Amino acid sequence: MKIVFATNNPNKLKEIQSLMPNGIEIINLKEIGCTEDIPETGETLQANAFQKAHYLKEKYGYDCFADDTGLEVETLNGAPGVYSARYAGSQRSAEDNMAKILTELNGKENRKAQFRTAVALILNGEEHLFEGKVEGHISLGKQGEEGFGYDPIFLPENEVRSFAQMTIIEKGAISHRGRAVRKLVSFLKSL
Ligand code: IMP
Image 1 (cartoon, rainbow, N blue to C red):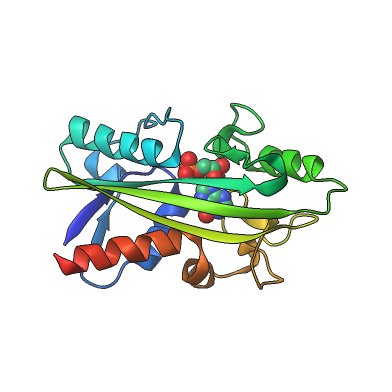
Image 2 (image 1 turned 90 degrees about the vertical axis):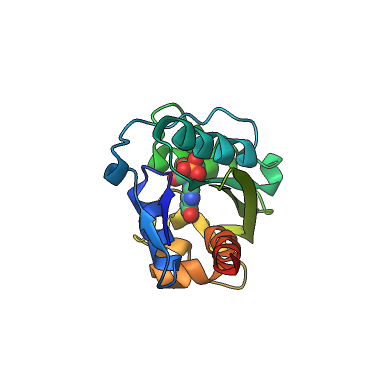
C-alpha cells in the first residue's frame, strides 16, 4: 500500500517513515509536486489535521493523512497548544519558541506538559481520526541535539533524557506521534 503524508516538515517525514512497517510506503509532498505551505488555520489540532488532509485531497486528488501536534503546558493553561508553531511569533522559530517557554516557566515549580497529536486520514471518501499523547515535564534548559521543535526541552514521563537525547526509534516508541501513528497503522492493516 502507498499513501501520501501531507507534511513539508522533513523531520516529521523521517519520523513517520521510521514508524511504518514493511508494506506501507509513504509518498511525500515533493513526489506529488506540492511544495507550497499547506494552510492550517483551525482552532483545534483535529481541525488543522483535517484541513491539511482535505487541502491535499482536493488540490492534488490523493488519499492521504496529515498530522497536527501541540505542546500543552499545564501552568500556562494548555498553551501554546494549537499555536505551538508560532508561539514566539510568525517567524516560527523553534529556538524562540523554546526560549519563550523557558522564560515563562522561570521559577515555577509545576513544569508538567504534554504533547498531543491528531492524525487525520482521508481514504476512499471517508474521514478517520487517530490521536496520541505523551505526558512529561519541561526541562530547566535545552538538552540534546536530535529531533526538532520543542524536543530539547521536553522530558517524557519516567525519563531523565529529553526527546532530543533519544534516537528516532526511542522517541517513536513513546511519543505522541508514535502512539497516534500506531493506531493509523493498525487501521490500515485491518483493511
Ligand atoms: P505542527 O504539527 O507541524 O503544526 O507543529 C506545531 C509545532 O509543534 C511546531 O513548532 C513543531 O516544531 C512542534 N512539534 C511538532 N511535533 C513535535 C515533536 O514531535 N517534538 C517537538 N516539537 C514538535
